[in-house]
Length: 286
Image (tube, rainbow, N blue to C red; front, side):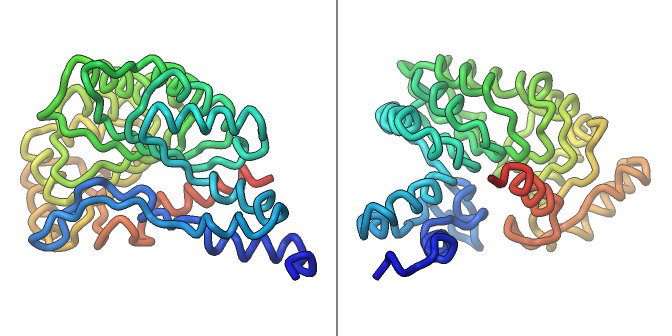
C-alpha cells in the first residue's frame, strides 16, 4: 500500500506528524502562565511511524532529526554514531536543543550537522561534568537564532566556565547571530549585557517586566548600544504603557525608544524572528 504513495506525498504526511512547532521545541523549562509556573515537557512526536516499513524509515528519519534535543552524554554518543553512519540524517538537523550532556561527542554531533541555524542552550551542569564538547560544538556552530536559559543565581565552576564561553561566542565569534531570546525572570548583569551590545543581533526578545527592570538599572541602555539591533520585543502587552513612560523619563533617544515593540507571547507573529527563521530555512533547503 505504501509503495503506491509518491515520495513527496509520503514526506508531507510524515513531516506533519514528525515535525515540532517552534514555540513547543524552544519552550523554556519554567514559564509563568498566570499564577502558575509551568514545567517544560518535550513535545511528543509520532516516531513509531518509522516502523511501518523500511521506506518510511528512510524518508522519515531525517524529518525526525530536523529538530534535535540532547540531554545526556549517552544520547549524544548514539546520535554521533548515527550521523557517521548516515550523513544525510546529520545534514537534516536545523534546530538543536542542548539541555546537558556536554561531553566530547557533542562536538562530533555538531560538526556532522552543518545545517543547524537555531540553538537552545540550557546551562545546567554538575561540577563533575565536562565542557570540552561544548567548546568544540560552539566553535563549529554558526547560529542565527539563540535561546538562552540560565539561572544566574545558581552555579558552580563548570556552569561559570560554560557561561563565559557562551558570552564570548555571542560577542566575538557568532557573526551570523541575529536573534536572542531570553526566559522570564532573567537576571540581567553586565557580563551578559556587554556581550549582547558587542554582538551582531538584530532582535532581542525578553519578558516585558524584565525589560522594565533592566531599563531602571541602566542595563538596557548598554544592550541598545548593539550596532545592528533593530527591535527589542517585550513579551507581555500589559506592561507597555508603563514602559513607554519609563523610556521617556530615562531620556532614551527617540531612535532607541522606537525599537521597542510588545507582543502577547513567544508565538506571536509580530516578531522579526519569524522572518529570520524562514530565511534561514530557505537558505538551508536541500
